[in-house]
Length: 239
Length: 268
Image 1 (tube, one colour):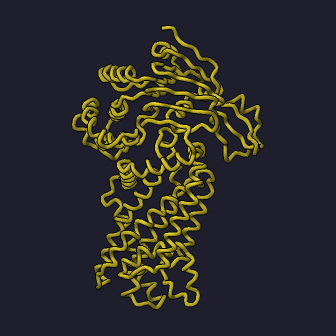
Image 2 (cartoon, rainbow over the protein chains, first blue to last red):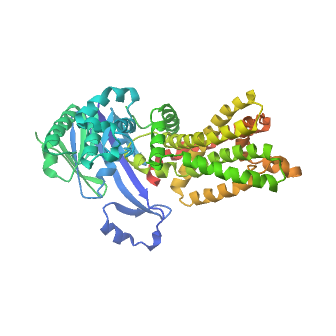
Image 3 (cartoon, rainbow over the protein chains, first blue to last red):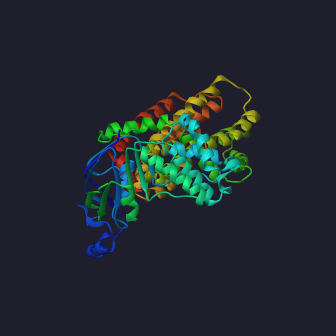
């Protein structure tokens, strides 16, 4: 099952530690993406998402577009469950895999094998489940005996391969991505793309944020454009 | 991983605590990972702390024993064990403020019970305490001749002490995430508390002013671990104060946690 519904959700950050009075509101509004405003206590607040409403049904592939600071990443983080909106209704059904930071939790002094368990735990997988998939991940990452070596002995490409293999090992109902993942040299890259495509086609809902318009039109069924924390465009793509 | 939001804040807070406590494959692993990173490639690792603690008590024991006119045979174990328990309490208090700030990367990116970050910090300090415990064992072997069943009471005492770390870290973690001056205040308080709490001196030395130790909850927290290790039974008052501290702590913290849990991600 996969279903997401957001109704008038608001995510706003209070900027603490600023001498708010010294800031010219209009000046900042011109310079940043998020809408700056003052709340009741005269503190400076950044509205990262401003009454966003969005309903995503099973089968949809959403392409999120927008400038830097338009709220794409914030929206993905709300979908991932990291930020709870301060206002509005938000409902999400189905298992979520977030590919926002595939290296989060990796420990340079742990072995590759231990890092699979660390990453799996951060992704919310049970130990038993990780034990089932660990061999497949190690095989896919093609690290050979390096899997028993500490991560700090890896090249950056090798650790990315491990991170990628772990992040894409579990199929889930909803997949969140900030830019399309691509890793490795030519050989590995095509293998990785096949794996990612497989994962994406098995998912019921995919939300992909990118600056690359052609990537989104190729892979998505619907484009949502954000600007200053609001949805300014929401259109279905004809197949 | 199924998630449906729109639950009441209270339900979510209780679920956070429950999911955190039951994630016993997550926080011990993350706690170990932190220790490993802190002591990377050092041959002795956390045992460096054990050595420095050992040197400190070996120096302070005879000195303060003499200053206070105490017999070294009983004063030294009192000081050594008390100091090691104090180090646990002090680092729990000092690290409490950082639990959410230090976990910023996790909190902003993935959905994970906040309790996991609390338990990870407590587990890390428990591991360091276990390393320091080597000194306790040495001291016990050298100084305390009578082994008795009281020694076993150290386990419930220690568990209770660590449980108090949970609510403390939840509360201070939230406070410090929001108000960044508080970690500095905590550090100062911990420094002063060391001298005001019977670690280097005994409560009995206060004479008529023993109440000054009795009203100090830190004294009772130390006692429930230190007294059993010295082969004594902690006073009933100590068990009662710690029990009340535990219940009271959670009674105050859980409503705060329910109210502000969702705000933590915005504060850090």
